[in-house]
Image (cartoon, rainbow over all chains, first blue to last red; front, side):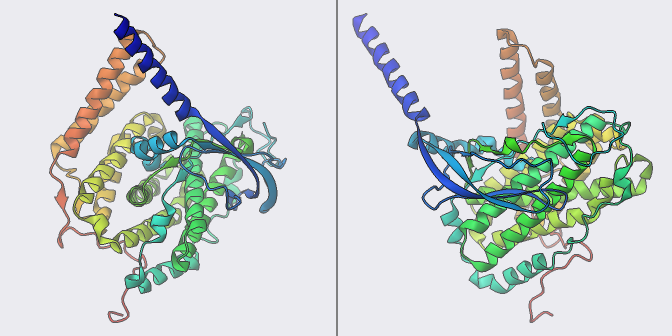
Length: 111
Length: 358
């Protein structure tokens, strides 16, 4: 009985540790160059990150500033913005790398 | 919400916010960068020059037809959703190709990806403006956060993107030809632009076909199983999605099932240009299975909103039934590509000829 309880507690602790590892993020800050065009001729938003900020699977990128444009940009706007990259843990990165095939419908869906 | 500057001022519809949920992908760019294309350099250079020509540079110019009143157009909301999905797909493609351009070193591949990104961004802009006509505003703030970068192996990107471009061509040209024969169903002028527009999709697919031909191992051995998997994934995804959008196709005078089967047939013919196999779509079991999946999927949709254990169990059972049917479809014997059935190309579409053949 006591051994069973101990094993359960150990398993619970292991799962909690794994979850903590999985969800842990490292925050990187930097400044990026943003190229934005939103109009009839073209619509794109490209971000040139500093070389030390490589995006990997599971990461989240946040562009901190966006210009106030009333629907259209009237040509391409290029500006610098502070950016944050929330780096996924090694575990999350590898889980995403090895499981993305299940999200294949995203890649194959076409209007 | 943003105020769009030149909306159709007569619209009775309230300002709506576009739902744009682009996908953000990463891949092993170093692996792509290691691809050797020197043995087909001339053909890749020819392809790059084709993109450089920019055949559709002046195509996406709006005319007065876009200024009409679309308040009472048939299937207006379904049409807006179509525009949102299209804009999302084009914008996502624009980002993916731009990332390739940024990470690769081969000047021909870099330039080609840059041109393809240009095309996708151009399509996205055209769709974006059409949404604005319908009083649908795009909130750029949704693009501030790029969440959950997904990763696909380079070969998966090549198979899937090739198929996405080719099936995109097949979809657009099938709609265009149908509306050309039945102009009474032209619910919006944007469809008149589809003929030349879809040539961009076809040309992008040609590039991926060339890329795969240059790496023969992608088309042999165990990879043939991946090719069959992606073919089925693309066809089944489209079939299930379109079944749930039947009213949109009906507004254009199309039966979604007939339309999808035409599109799948055309795409299945085109893929023989590069794939060693195509799917056995004339095997009666093929559509019997896909139709069963549609029926299961509609039963799942009918259970939407129910969270009780019985409903959950039913949904699980139905999803398992879909998976079983898809696996059975995957197991059908594929059609080998032979000299008799290989795709000969589109009439009047530029094709590469070697200097010795010219």
